[in-house]
Image (cartoon, rainbow, N blue to C red; front, side, top):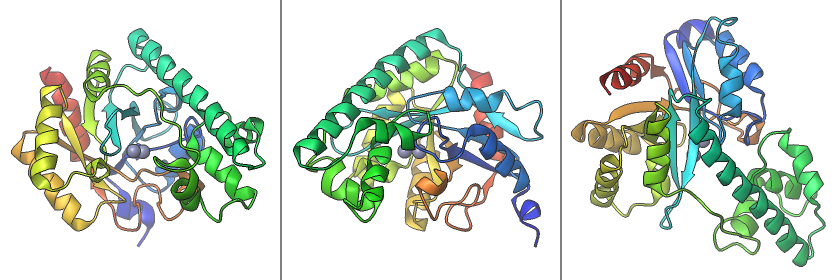
Length: 290
Ligand SMILES: [Zn+2]
Ligand SMILES: [Zn+2]
């Protein structure tokens, strides 16, 4: 069957571009999404709206609906907490100001990581990292790619495990927004805050996850990413159940990074992630209600 036909009416609301750690530009992503028949997409780069703003500028020339988006890293010591923001005003001045602070912190951290690697005897320079970043935000995945190119490690995964992740030899912590700050920033910019891939929170069990969700909802969270390439059917069922129980919206996306995350394809993730357009309608309705 024709791929565009299979995907018609489907969406992908979790995509990274070269503005963060993805390997394709916003325009390349929009063109690819249109070609495979997606009806709506959102570019959700880490701590920047640059990719999303660029994508939005193509919405008139491409027959595909483009939602604004971002993915914020929030401070959550037990695990990784990412908060997605949809339908935000990408030119909101408060949002831009706060993101600049976060980006500065990220840039300083990258320099510290490279210095630590040098101390460990690794031959790496910061300009090599900038080169692989494609001109957007620089992050640990880019440092990992340089380490792979140089044969220091075999894979990006190994770079994180041995060196870059918490507890690794070259790990450096950085300033992050608190979960409530990230949520409030998105709300103030007119957007819808959604908890991304809940399994990365490392909650011990469903009860613990539920209590985290309740806290986040109190802080203004409006939805949960139920559909994601890295979710097992059990994850999906659990998140669906919890979202419905707490009156939270359901969203989904592939977390596509292009060649930077092999095995995850735009729109379909690891093969059969088809996310229906009605979730976008619910997102839009939730804004009207506010
Ligand atoms: Zn994420
Ligand atoms: Zn992501």
